Image (spheres, rainbow, N blue to C red):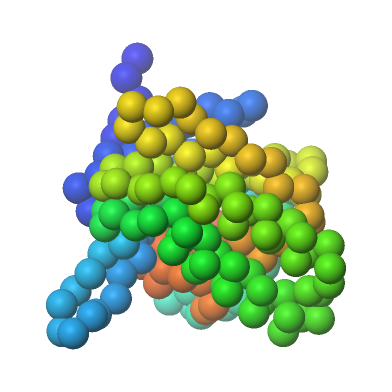
Length: 209
């Protein structure tokens, strides 16, 4: 049976995927900005969760989407819910791996430094992530995924480039893993407003059932 596809800025995302468990696409969006009055899109984002994530968010039942969107406690609860999470990025504007690495580095470092969690171990772990991306070149439609298991504070990062074998990296520093989750799905401080709006809208609907 073919899986339904959801178009995120014309890029198809399967509505369901299976990692160790079946996961559903519950939020999506893009990262973009205005550069010299031109609207530039960088990559699309799809965020997958185990469907039972809803049972861990019952305290937000009945809240309208707009309210959830502005409630960082909701996104903290979403991030810490003990379910599997999976983030899939598809590149829209080609970018060097080194440039993408720098974006992650500054986002993670600033976040952890603000929380007083940026020690030597975090710095080393982050350096390894940067190194993993360093030599890659992301053409349009290259795919980067982050798989966050339910029962461990790790992240498996996979890069799929056209005509090349997938490359994988397992990140094992819990603070860096948490900061990456927050960068993508952390409410008001997340990198993509459209993804946060989409998550708020989906969960507002799911929590009203």
